[in-house]
Structure formats: structure tokens, C-alpha cells
Image (cartoon, rainbow, N blue to C red; front, side, top):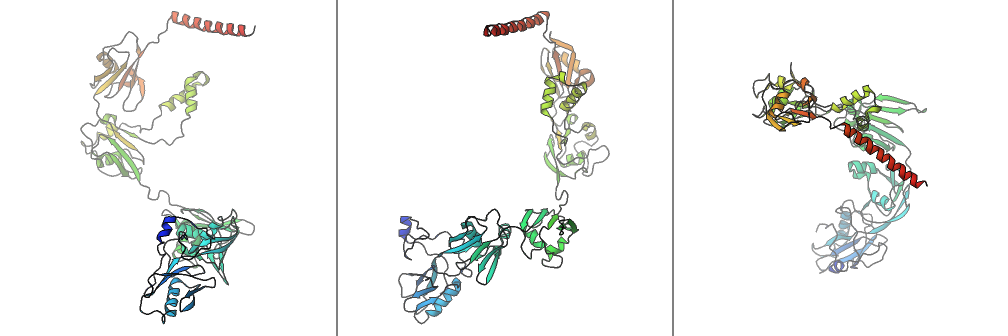
Length: 526
């Protein structure tokens, strides 16, 4: 009968009581109040080693119910008729084989079952740079990291590498960094009641910088090599320039010397001659390749057949090729207002200064006022007449895919190509008799659209017509705008409502307020 590994189900009474026993309480092996603490995964019969306090379920063909047997402090299990069988220190698989051999003459047939019922608890010394050094109570199976955590964790001056598990004449190394970053169980071995865990002081270190997931400082342990340091940092990132790696090493006078290092060979053949052994204070630098796998993207918006993102070669592909891939224009596209919005990498605007300059123009110079106006009007669109560029194509097929040619515009990563919807009207606003939209007619000027909107009102300032150009968003005088285009806005400003009586009224109001303040102060000081 093969060995059955794993804890038997708790008796029904245990589930009903729900009582938890103290780790130090002494209970009967079959006491229903005894609850097995959680363990790490499934118990491995080839790594779990039997020790005093382990409980086993034993049954054979002549027994109706299993018997619960506990390993004695001396490491033995006492079997009826067969006597004591020493099992401490054996793996579960070895213990099962030894029990089966010892009971061969006492148990007939193949009905023997010998399985772990409840793992033991034991005391283990955890010493050195931990927050609460001393013996801790653990439940098997347990690893070194759990024992250290039970002692309060590593103290501020403790090392995470070079930890020692002393096991008789032998010692095991613990590397919690390698265990945490790579999941290497060899860096976090199982510990037993015969061990002592010691956490040393962190003093000697090495460093790694650059294209690795976890750059920084690491404890140095004897025998560390370049490949070990790179593994601790999580292995190189895809963009790492391994052929440009450098190692900085300090001499006795703490003067650093940089040298190229064959990192490709060191990682390909760990422990080889190219894989240098590290010294205290060594620093490894792994630069990255610029723009590694960074694809440039532009966005096409508006009246095209397939709007959305498109990949480009940054600074090489032109607007025509991208619009061709976008399927060309729809029947509603207004090429006269097409534009390219581009990120402006200049410094952020000093909004506080701009607001102050606008509200208190008397405190800024003429040059500063001009600068303020320029900043306010600043926009991130490419300054070019796209309608003329796009009109050189043949209908919707504006050009062939490929680099930007003569008369084309090269696109950059993050550009937005906007093709607005045709808007065959002009907006007339302000002091006109019928504000709103007026049908667009090519060649007409601002005054023509004012007349079409019913003419000026009595409050209109006829000499102050302004036009907002839809293609650029810029405002200008009507005389500077020339012929109006579809989508533009014509503004008619009003005259300020000021009169002699209004000026006198303001003066009297101010004088009355001053007199009131004087009376209040005079009464208060009597």
C-alpha cells in the first residue's frame, strides 16, 4: 500500500466546538480541540522530515478505525506488538518504508496505512539582527523566512542575504532577496527543531543601476559574481545595452575606476572567467537603448473614412500617407479648416503672472505686455495651409504611403490630424440686428455678412469689427482678415456706455462713500 500524504479530516466534534488551543497547550493526540495550523501548500513526502510531536494515523486490515500515534521526544513511534520504531529525521517516504518493513511479520496482507495526521509544533532559536531574538514556536513544515518573521522580522541593521541556518557541523545559506525576486526556494530552506537561524549585520554591499527591474544596493556575500548581482536585480530588461555595461571598482584609497565588462558572456556562462567575482563597493551600470520598441503614433480625427490611431515613423511619414491609410476624406470634409495639433514642449505657462499682468497692466512694461499677448495667443497647431497641401492629391486618395515628400508635412509622435466637418455658414455676433448663422458665399467680406445679418444696431461700434478665423482660432481686425471663410465668426463690438452724467454720478457716489467712512470714524473716536 503506497504512502498517503496529507492531514486527515478533523473529527465532527472539532468543527462544532470551533475552539482554538494555545500552541503550548498539552492535549491528547486525539483531542478534538486540537486544530492544525495552516501549512505552506501540500506536504512533500520527500522533503518533510519527521520529528518529535508529529502525529500519524495508523491502520491495517484488522483495525476498523485508525489509531493516532505520536512521535516521542526521543524520536520513536510505539506500535502495538511491534514495539518502538525510530523515525525522527527521516522523510515521510523513508519513515513509511521503515514502518512497513518493521511491521511485516505482524500485519498480514496489504491493508497497511501510515500517514501524517497532524504536523508538529516545535521551538527554534532565531538569533542575531532580528527584532525579537530568541526561541520561537513554529509548526512544521516551515521555512527560514517564516522563522525570522516569527521573531519580529529582520531588524534595521540586519542583512537579507548571508543568513545562516546552523545544522550541527553543517550550515545552510539563506538568501531572502533571491527567494523574493526569483522565487528560488534554495534561498529559503526548510528549518527543523535541531537548527539555529542567525541573521548577520548588514555591512558589505554591492550596487547595480540601469536597465534592470530592481536597481539598488544589495548585501554582498562571499562568492558573489556579476551574474548573481544581475539575477538579484531581476535580470536585464529587454532594452538593456549589455555590450555597454561598465563596472566601477574602488581601490584602497576609495578612488573609483570604471571598466567595460563582458556582461553578455557573463550571463551566458555563469561562473566562467568572464563572470567576474565582485568586491565590496562594486557598482554595475547597465545603460538602456534609446527609444527601444517605442513606436510613434498619430491620431486622425474628424471627417475621414477610418478615424483613429495610426503608427508612423517619427519625423519621416507625411500627412498624405497617413490620410491615405485612413481611407481618405468623407463627403462632409472641410479641407479649408484641416489642421495638425502638436504638443508644445515649451515650459508651462506662468498662469499667475499672466493673470496679474492682465488685471494690472499699469505695473508691466510695454515689452512685457507684448509678451503676455503672445503667450495668451500661443497655440499648438502646425502653422501651415493644409488645404493647399491636401488639394494637390487626386480626390480622396491624397497620396501614396511613404516618407514625406516636397510640399508634405512630416508627422511626429503624438500629433492629431483634424479634418473638421464642412460648415457652409458664417457666424455673425454682437451688435447686429439678427445675430446667428449666415449662409457662406465665397469672396464675401465681414461687412457683407453684417449687412446679411440685418446691419448694425444703434450701439454698434462700426469701426471695430473683429473676425475669429476658424482654421487657426486667431482673432484679427476685419480689414486684416480679407475674404471670410466658412466657419469663421464676425464680431461687432459695441460702444461703451459712458456720458457726462455717468461720470458725475460715479464721482458723487465715491464722494458719498468717503463721507460715510469719515462720519463712522468721527463718531467712533468721540
